[in-house]
Length: 58
Figure 1 (spheres, rainbow, N blue to C red):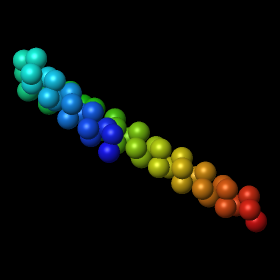
Figure 2: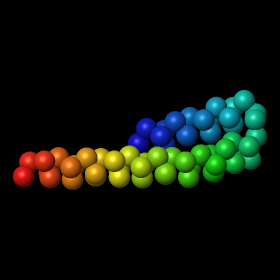
Figure 3: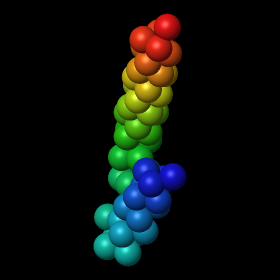
Figure 4: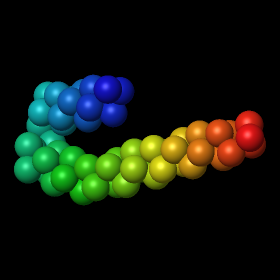
């Protein structure tokens, strides 16, 4: 998944630049619920569009 790869890249870059793993980890923890919310929203939208397209075929 693309988001997981980007998050790992951020962790690696953060570690090499010496920002501190705690700061990067807290940022990751703050972003995770947002990503999950977006993923849920996208799946709900696609599910609804599929239902609407099925209904229009009747």
